[in-house]
Length: 440
Image (cartoon, rainbow, N blue to C red; front, top):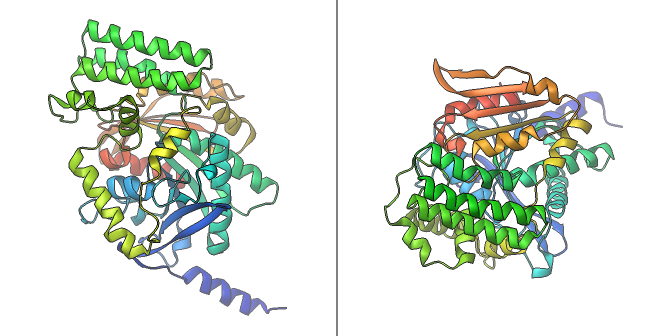
């Protein structure tokens, strides 16, 4: 039996252990966890650069991207909240300065994650969640010092479907004694949690902003209402294609508005480029490639397939993003299904803090649609939330947004922000992070 002094000494060694140099500043670690035979999920951990005696003094934040098929290690890291941007410049607002950040390429086939055979892709939201639980089991085996560190799950877009079920399955696995984890909260960013509520909000939002006229609004609503009918009939594949048709009506009526930030400068003939794309290419480019301009898309691809892959020692047979299209395709049957019932279960059956943050300039997951599906939540403390006041978020005397809390649920409205809230309004997001993680 080890003496108490030796136990303390070994614990200190674990707490002081560091990662290794990676791509960009600070200590890092990365690797693969085989979540199933033939399914290899990649993670990239950035240890906090905060001035603390041990990185375990700060929480661990998971970041899940959308799509499905978009890469957290690529888009989330270099476009939104990692320590360096797409051009190698250091970010002052990176989350890493306040906490440890774990980017996960999920589902398998996204980013650097890959499958040996098409039979190993996930096809449902629950399968995605179970794979993520297996990823965390493997991660904790490699990094047991994080088992007691508060864990917070953050996500964006389609992540708003994946993260709630992941959090729920991780909580239940913890309750069954299958995993040790200090899971504390889950926060959904500009979420695709109830797809049809998002789609039905497009026309009204664009009309109120003056981006489309009545004719454009009517064309968008007609397409959106047909999408809603297909969802009601649970004709999920047809609903996904009709969602794409509704996007096309938006592009035509607006002459190329940006789906991720309606105030972003775009080329006047931008929608004409989409005209040359097949319906499948339009779907994929909007949800997986983030509708970035062609130059940024190519820069990110070159970065991830070149310097980053070389630095991290990615196997030569793995090409970043090469399986993302297949990931999106196989989830078409699940794409338009809501997961409001999962959020209900999180609120009713777990002690986890649950939140939503939404940028007011986002179109793809428009805030009015998000407010509408939140109103459909049905848990025992629902009235407490609905009757709560909406308070201002003020940072350095600047109005950055609003928040409303009741029970274990909080909604954040983020001003001057589109879909990528961490990059668009870092001050407001710092407030959200502090509210959920209490870092420092």
